[in-house]
Length: 474
Figure 1 (cartoon, rainbow, N blue to C red):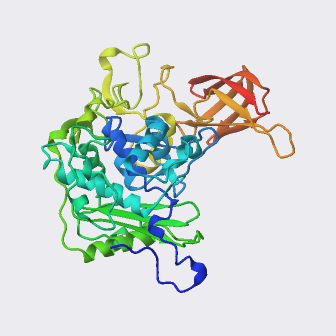
Figure 2 (figure 1 turned 90 degrees about the vertical axis):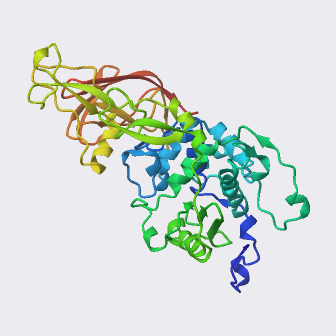
Figure 3 (figure 1 turned 120 degrees about the vertical axis):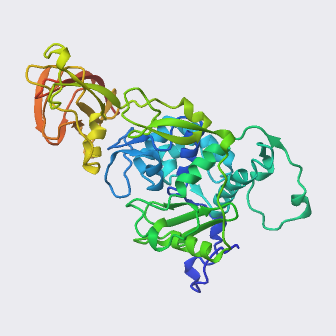
């Protein structure tokens, strides 16, 4: 079925525009192709924790749809909830140029401007796509999953194509070319679809239970900036359905989101279609891996418990859990100790999930079972545990002095997180005391161009020292 517009009779409504082939802002609809690429290269496991914290990259500050932070969130959860900050951080880690190359090879011809034109916003709707190509790419992925075993565990190049208006004899009898490898391994496609088929959508996907069908469907929504475009795409082994809702003239509407207006149409279509099946797992390209039950990374010696998952074979290359540590406690297990202040024979050794300060600050507000490290016993000192983290400027190396509208020099803003929300931090720049903060750790200060030294000391004696350069924009 091909429905390119509505039956609206108003001339100014854009009723004559074929929306299916019209380029529109993609919203979050491209995120599955990023996660699939990360699974494909073993850079990410399905439930590995990814950061969801305040982020600013060269002046670009992405926000989640609900403008909140989880601190850390399983990758699968970040994808089904379509969280923006984890997606931007993962794109930056994977490589903007690599992802740009991927989407072009997938067949998105509307993404044709230089990669720097899009920047990291390409993953949040900074690029344009259309329903025709979106449907074609998802259909291609589904054909690969359907036919991989049929072609003796090879990829048929005829499976990667856009939809046809008319099926001719020449199309039906195209020569088959089989390949051993494809841009996305069949296992990474399957992994991505398994996540997108999760019917238990978290809180941001409000209302899904009112329209989701009993059929297993891999589905994703997207919403463009200004609520101008609402997307939904869903696929099974038999069908791919894609929906766009909006105004052809580009005018936005409050409440015009993929979940609220496009997804109900998507599932209404699936309800009218014959019963569907689900994709067979490509076991030849999957491995069973032991992962940390709390962090989702590969199981390490310091993890408390292991779970077993099916993962693309490349997952064996992913990281071992970086967050579990061995913690030494006193006999009561209420205080941390070390061999300089406490008897080794009385020490209790525990495995502990220790998130970085910025992640922990937000994570424990959403995860009440998370336990922060116990305090140090009196007369015990430890300088190796970093309790503070810099939120902004991220990756503090070079900071630009903003220029105000009147031409005067602005102030440099610093923001820091502490593992203890009630801690006091003492700020020093170039060994000169500047300020002390409690609760919210944010200051603004005028600085001269050149190299500076930031020293943060909390009330417990922990230090964080960073060198940075202040640059003046001309």
